Length: 385
Ligand SMILES: [Zn+2]
Image (cartoon, rainbow, N blue to C red; front, side, top):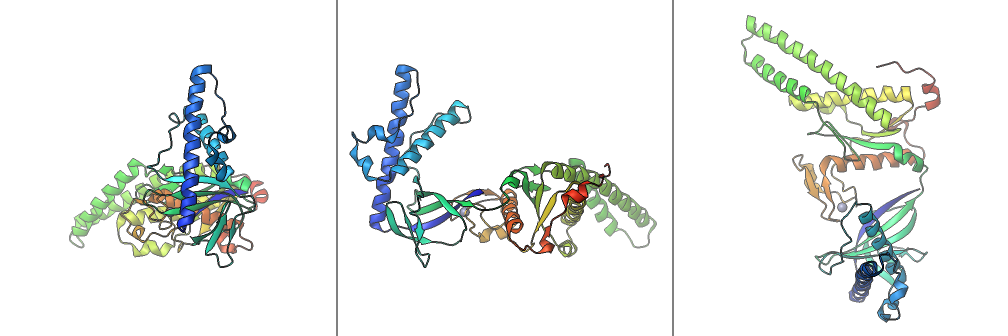
């Protein structure tokens, strides 16, 4: 089982907006009131008491009119904020302000339903809200969060429990994106940089190659320069192989399942920019190392098709953002859900989720899936590197 959030834009009518405003207000009231009362109690008694919504319902009867699960979730949120504070992970819980985005979370007890044409959604205490269901999901809805942004847009986020057999594997799976700036970026946001000495040699190679191209044909000097360039090429290759061996071994050691982009070699040939073609060449080398090391150690490499627009899709809400086609866009904010993305990390997350999709789909195409028999291959002793 994995839990994933699916976020959709909704278009509530005026009555529904009024209802949401009431719930936001009650949730905020309960949250702030209980937070302040708990602080006062702590000052007076030295003890923290977990104040529940029931405590206030007789004094503030308006609390009874809204979804009681929304209040329970506010209580859980508040406790989580306290916990984070006590563990020194966060500052002291903040009071909720009217000026920020407003939201509440409730749970699905079988009441969340889509209309047959998928244009409306019904949630506890509020039925037939117009929704733009731009993406489908499979699984059970566990909770629902309704959000109103500062600019008066409404969204609904569904936490869906998906039935995949991959659950236990999820701790051991990673997505990798070939970065332009960093060598590889993984789905946890870890960046593997090109080694400095490698970049240095590459710059030197570019310089020497430029010199070579300016030299007179068939001259003695040109011949010398050609040998110099060839030696540099060799040196870079050795440095790179050494680095790639360490890197691929590290990634194989850390992860059972590795999702990568299936980059075509022809992309490399079309590219005449030296730095880029070196990166591409080392990527194919890196992938081949991953593949054979996976076969020794029993890992699985999942190749995501190269036409999958991993750097264009928002990994939170799946919106496809056209501005990301520009490779210079390193950071972007999703216009649909407001998530802020680092280009390469976002791509790596998308490669990971596509990989999970491929891995869990029945009858996956054998070309896209390298399922290696781990028992068989691990019985062979892997050669030492
Ligand atoms: Zn988004």
